[in-house]
Length: 88
Picture 1 (cartoon, rainbow, N blue to C red):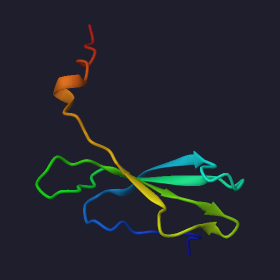
Picture 2: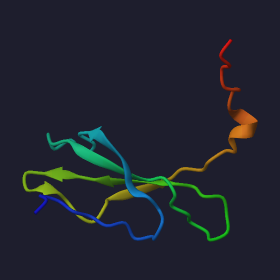
Picture 3: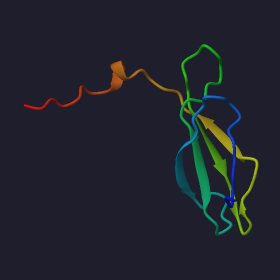
């Protein structure tokens, strides 16, 4: 049995698709965790935004629920991404 398990609240949001050490956000000496949901969508039929959830670490493991979440607005790649390098 895993030490910590969490399930995202939106079907198809790809909750847990990325994880990152957030460092010690709250200054308690214990690292905290960011969990990504790359396909999280705040408004149905809108551009998919994605979301990062912050979980605080404690002596007993990660605390639930997430203490914060940040929506990440995606910009269409066609307007900002460079063209891929071509092999010559």
